[in-house]
Structure formats: structure tokens, C-alpha cells
Length: 583
Image (cartoon, rainbow, N blue to C red; front, side, top):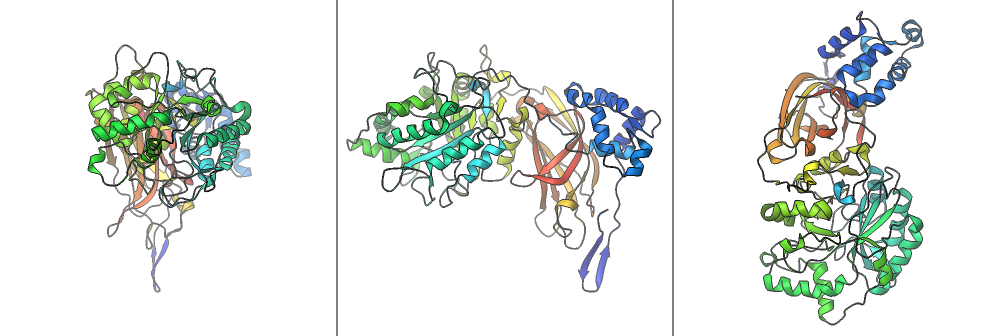
């Protein structure tokens, strides 16, 4: 029971009746139907309920119905266990359905085909993975790298710069006040934590600002650190990318080959003539937008490099460094249309800033999709996101971009969507792209107006657990919280919508019993958004939990929904009881 006394002043206490709500009517009806006598439900009867209501996706639960009953029964008092033996009461049945461990909304196992080329997958990708905070003055550390790998991130970005004495390599955000971290520390951390959350390959993208001598030193450090874990292709140019299955427990390096540095002079001349830069290779500080509208040296990293080249300081290539590169980041010499050309005999990676992707989507949408069928497209945040905020990822995924690089140390709704996408496929960091993005017969048109393929019906029953995760006065000083739930879809523009329940006043265990229906034109890329807030009349509503889930992975039936904090970490107890149905 939740305590119901709140002190308003020294002499006055408000008392609220603490009640435990009954199970929802749908839960009671299901229990009565499958238990036979409406009193006890055996393991066999539970198995039949799962078969009829939770579909074929619950093969693991069907085979473990007895284990579920035993686990629920084991929580009872000794006397109750001896009386009821191996069967469930209505309360037990409700506890099972409301258990995020026993009745989660999506599967926790890898279940997709992992034998297609890497270009066939969305890959969990970090941006400036070493930064602990903002992009201008925060510290560089191995801690955010480790945290990202533990969460399942598969692409780690490191910016490589010479140290002050030019004899070693630092990792930091160049031309800023960010403090450095030693490259070897980063490599050792990656080696130790790369496969804690997932056995599938980790890709390290280098943004390289080094001399050939230091490139050779990087090559030695990488080779000695990773040893046989390192994947190095036999030829300079791969005709097709390898598969996640074949690359299990392997490390890949992706950056531009050293010879690309020499070609930067051509890029500088082209950009000065056209006054427009549509693409960037690996210099994330370069801005993929009309530079004539900006003052100062926005293309700082790329311009520093090209200025050195124009002075005659052309570096020779480092063969040993070049040999490490598994995925080449090619540099187009013309415009975006040329950059998106698909070459028959090799694959490559192209990097675009978020605003460049928006322009590409507007003018060359199908070319982008065609490019990503074979090659890797990486999108990264624009340079003005100094607080480490993020952008909307759906437009990137709708165009087939595999590496949608995010500031994992940030927070906010965009990052929640990223977390939601990669909860799919057992949280392994690789999510198979839908078939329509890989069709060789007809290239998908992201601008096409599509009719609904299906509809998702969502029912929000109730919530519980906040009183265990928060202090009594966290939401309201003088009364229990007034919770409401927002439910909606993030996906194709035609599918985007948010709805909300009514406010449930003064209750730590709110009961809503409200149902919503969402027509879906592109269910393959839709994410279910769930947020809970405490309503406040005189100030901003208080956040009380969130979760994003891939619609394509939702298990039908009544499910327990765990809630997370703003950073995406799961609360110990706060959860919702909901039902999903595809119609």
C-alpha cells in the first residue's frame, strides 16, 4: 500500500485513501475463461491462454509455463504455497501479466537473418563517442565509450590528433576546449567491452588528422591491441561487404585511405568555385551546407588540412595504415549526385551532415536509397549541436542510411527513438532493413504517399511502481501524483501522431482503461512512443517515464511495459500494463 498522508502546513495533514486497484476487466475475463472454475489456473491452462492470446512468438513462454507458475508461486508465503501448490490465483495471474521480466513487450533474442552484407542493416552508431558532455568544453574519456558498448552500440567514433609534442596520438574534438584522452586507453577499453552486450562486429570510425608517421603508429597500436580480432580485407576494394554473422567478435576500421588527403586540394578548389559543399568525408566539423551564408571557417577541420596541402605539405601515404581499413570512406570530387553513384566493383562509406541528408532527401531521395542498398551511408549531427543534442532519425532510416550517428551522452526524445529502434533484434546493435529498402526491382520512393498496411490497437490499462522509485513528494508536495500517459507513433510522416489518456488524479496506481488505434503505412519502421507525466496546473508537467518500442517487434496480447528515465535507463519498478493488437 502507498502511504496517503501529506503535510500541507505545520497544523494540517491531508489524508488520501491508499487503495490497490483490482485487475483490469480484461484480465479477470481471461482468468475466468481459462481457469475453468475461476479460482485457480494450472500450468496447462496458462499454456493454453498463451497459445490463444499471445501468438506464435511466445514459443519460449509456452515451453516454460510450469517455470512461470513456479516462479510466481515461490513469491508467496509458505502457508499459501502449501495450500495452492502449483497453480495461480487471479492475483497471481495479474502479477504474471504485470511482470516486465516474465511478460515483456518484445523478444530479447536475436531472431533476424544475420547472413546478409552489412549494408542490409541499420547499425547502432555513436558520434564523438569519447565525449562526456557538450561538444565544446567537456572532457574526453573512455567512460562514455564503455557505456555505449554496454548499451549495444556497434560503431564508435574517435577523432585522432597529434599531441603537443607531435609524437603520440590524442583523441579529442579538435579546435575546441575539450580535454584529450590517449588513443591507447580508448583501444584497450573497446577491446575489453566490445562484445559484452553483443557478439556482432564493432566498427571504429577514425576522423584522422595525423601525419603519415603517426598513422603508422596508429596502425601498430591497433594491430597489437586487437590482434586476431581485427578484420583486414585481403584486397583494397571490397565488391561486397561481409556479413555480421561472419564478423562475430571482430573489430573493423573505417576511415578514408591516406591518399585521400592529397585529393583534398581538388575539393578545396571545387568548393571555392561553387561556394557550396554538399558532402563531407570524415571531417564532422565541416558543415554540409551553403558556406556562402556563413562567416568564419566553418569547414575548420577540412580547411586546415587543405590549407596545409596548398602550401606544398602533401603527405605521402602510410601503406600499413591503409591496410587496416576494412570500410573505405571515399571522397567524391563533384556534387551530391555524383557522390551517390553506385560502383559495380567496390563498396564504400559516405558521410553526410544531417542537413545535407535533408537536401539529398528532397532532391535525390531514390538515389540515396539506391546507394544504401550496397554502400554505407553515415549521417552525423550538424556542428551547431554544441550541447550534444540529436536530430530526428526517421528520415535517415526511411532513406536506408545504416549509420545514423548520435551523441549517446545526450538525452531527449530523438535519443529515445534511437534506443527504441535498437531494442529490436535482441538489442544486438544490428537491425535488418525492411525488404522495400533493398528491392532491386523497384527503388523505394520515400516521398510516395502510401495507404495504411495495417493498424495497431493499443489499450492502456494501468500503471504502478512509481512509489518504489520516487520519494512521496517527488511529483506533488501535498498530494499523490496526477498521472496521464501519452501514446503515439514515430515513423513515416503519414504515421506520426501522439494521443493521450485522461488525467488520473491523486493516485500512485492510476487506472485508465483507454484504447487508441493507429493506422500504419510503414509499420516496418514505426516506433511506438510511450510517455507518462504528472499533470501540474501552475507549472510544467513532471516527467514520470518513457519507452520507445519497434512496432514490428511488438508481441500481441496483454504486456508489461517497463519505463525508463530521461537518459534511457530503466526504472526498477515503474511500469504500465498495456495490450497490443494488429487489425
